[in-house]
Image 1 (tube, rainbow, N blue to C red):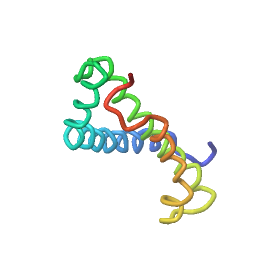
Image 2 (cartoon, helix red, strand yellow):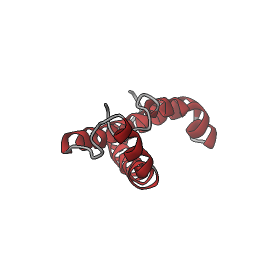
Image 3 (cartoon, rainbow, N blue to C red):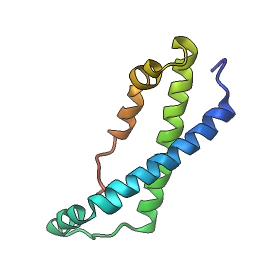
Image 4 (tube, one colour):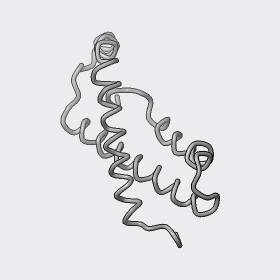
Length: 107
């Protein structure tokens, strides 16, 4: 990681984690809440997350944010700072989000 400022990566990752947490809350906790309740009731599962499940998702979102910023910082030193670097070459960080399906909690 020569040339990558680890402190800035962590700070940027925490900011990105806040953005990810807010967007996940809005998507899963507001927009899709009723759909998730219907689905969970049809599977005879509880409709509310436990505190542990919520904590796991919050920590996961921060890990995704830090990983995405680290990936961008590592690629930026090779390809330069541009929109192509951020959007095109760093897009594998989006695959971190696809590791978990859009679901309010693991079942």
